[in-house]
Length: 326
Image 1 (cartoon, rainbow, N blue to C red):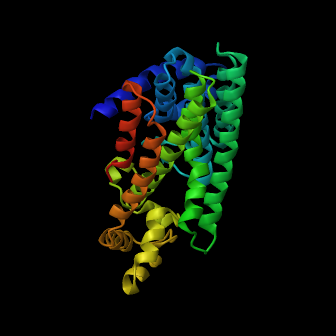
Image 2: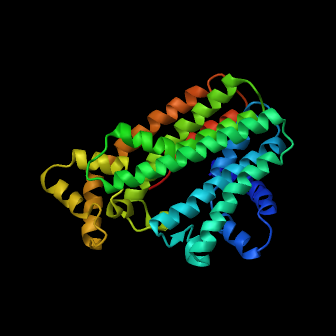
Image 3: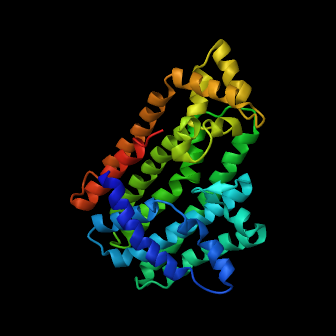
């Protein structure tokens, strides 16, 4: 796919820059900090930073520190998410805390977080742009933490949240970093509030569409692609949009089959597969993709006043995100 190739080419440039910034002693600490970066990831967020800069005629070199910072924050959140969820694998390799131990994993996350702000303040951008970048990224980090706790609380509570509550949660947990990626890219190219706001809106709506699609994959995704067992989110009791829709739509025995496995870590593989098949039969995939498409269309409207190849590449990113295969 052409879009995947563009993202991969961009990832190589970003990886080189990231690797140059994640070196130091003790070596083991930096090996841990770079572990997930070295072993995978599409670098989707840095791609958005760079393309958002280019759409406003900015230079890639000006956007590279911000692109690197966003990826560091993303990986910091993954390291700590894996600790909280006690996950053992990510990108097909052991998680940082499983490979390096808990104390080093926590420190590695802290290094990634701190380095993100260091690379911005070390950049050659104006002091005004640097201040804006630090302000935006620090707010996004707070949003991510708030969103993560909202997600944890939703999983713990018996109450089934509304779709609006779910969107608020993913708006903070996931979309905040998409939003700030595009806003930071814009700041690297311009000081015009309207342009920064338009790119910020694009990123936020793209992020919501991304997470809705990701949650669909989490329920009924192909384990060969996701590297997680089918129905993983269902077994873990995650209150994602596909699961909320399924519980609402299912009737009688179908609802019992879903609720039997929902949040049941000891469920049998046979019962889990049966619940996933029930969800498929309810037409959940079409409904969920329809919701993701609504946010993708909002994102596209944010870029209505722009033109050029960078715009085309950002718009095609919407298609890539919403049509990801399960």
